[in-house]
Image (cartoon, rainbow, N blue to C red; front, side, top):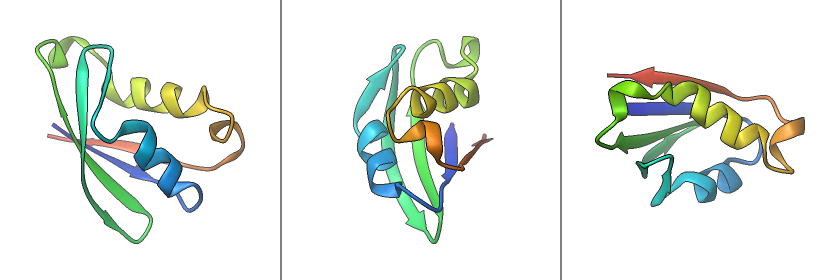
Length: 77
């Protein structure tokens, strides 16, 4: 599955937060950045049991920088 994060600010910090990381048994791999959009490949055995969009949003919001920025997250199958 692919996840696209749109963020006009803090893109480098968001990329660092997810690239080559495992969160809730899901692995995230950075694919590309085009303008404000960053694409990540998300893989894991329990992918169908996790709301990946909510997981990504909460992970960003729980950072110091994530509380004050505008961003959106979309899932692509």
